[in-house]
Structures are given as structure tokens and as C-alpha cells.
Image 1 (tube, rainbow, N blue to C red):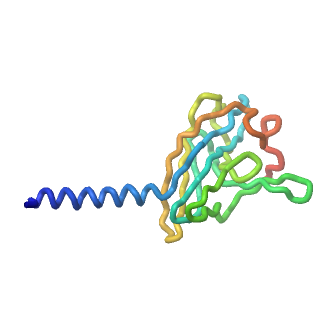
Image 2: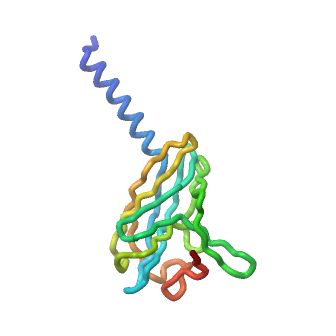
Image 3: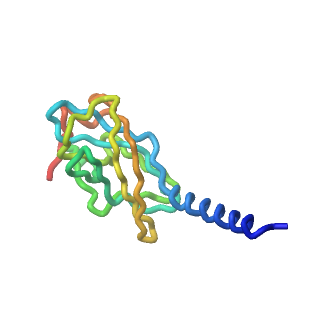
Length: 162
């Protein structure tokens, strides 16, 4: 025979499982930030982002940077250009979108400190679902050495214009 408390416990447990799954719609794997030299004012965060329901990455922030934008690097003729994705980065349902040097990335600008290999940088990502609801995802991105995986040359990112 079930008691009221057993029934209530089962209902609350089911609700908590549902809430947990709603917040698990966006996953971020393999995040990292490129290290910087002492006076460098910009770097990038890279990762793989998967949204089970689809949506778009619309904003980001970090306490280590005065300005954080979602960027794309692409060839325009023979020149590699970088630009902000004003409308956000589409995240097709169930497909991993890779943020990587030379492609999509989260640009950390007006850095407040040098980013040293071995440190961790907190980054908050804002994802807007197809239903218009926004979800924040907190990321702890380890800092890799300055020379890690292409994209930056001589301490700056080429072709960057504002």
C-alpha cells in the first residue's frame, strides 16, 4: 500500500529528473583557451557545443575579458578575415558544432590579465533554443600554451577588424 509521502516523493523525483534533463539540452566538451603573452589583449575559447533540441549560441561573457563575442574566421579571396556573428552561431539539433582555431570561436577581448598555461578561465555561454528561451552554460576552460593548434600568429589574430 502506497502512502501519501511515497506518492509525493515519486512525483517530486520525476519532476526533478525532468528539470535536470531540460538543463542538459546543451553540452560543451573539450573547452580550452589559448594562452597569451604579457601585454596581449585578445585570445580565443574553443570547444565542441551540442544542443539536443537545436538553437543558437547568442552571447558569451567572462570575468577575464572586457568584451566577449562569437566570431567566425573565413577566407575572403586570399585573405583570412574574422568577423562577429551578430545573429549568433546556429546549433543544429543533435549535431556537435566545433569552435576551433581558424573557424568559429568565442573571442575574448580587452583581456584584464595574461592567460597562462595551466590556469582555468570561466566562460558563460548563452544559448537560445528554437522556442526563444535562453539557457546559460558555465564552462571552465583550461588555458593551453600560446602555440596551441594554429589560428594565432605572433600573439594576435590576423585579419581582426572592428
